[in-house]
Length: 60
Image (tube, rainbow, N blue to C red):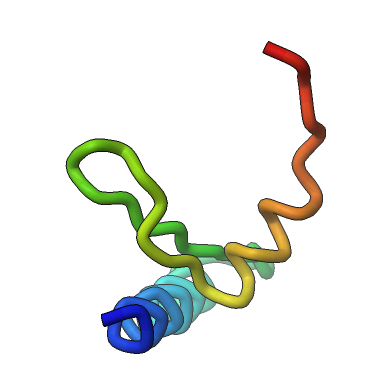
């Protein structure tokens, strides 16, 4: 299942990037993170992982 969700996330990235490119004047980075109904992370695309790694970590 992990492989299937990973492929889904990468496909979502690709299609969103194509859409943004076709409907805007600039480039916008797109990343996908998939969650289940209990808000647990299921999978992330390659770009989604890059974005997650660049988020600042704040103590709770």
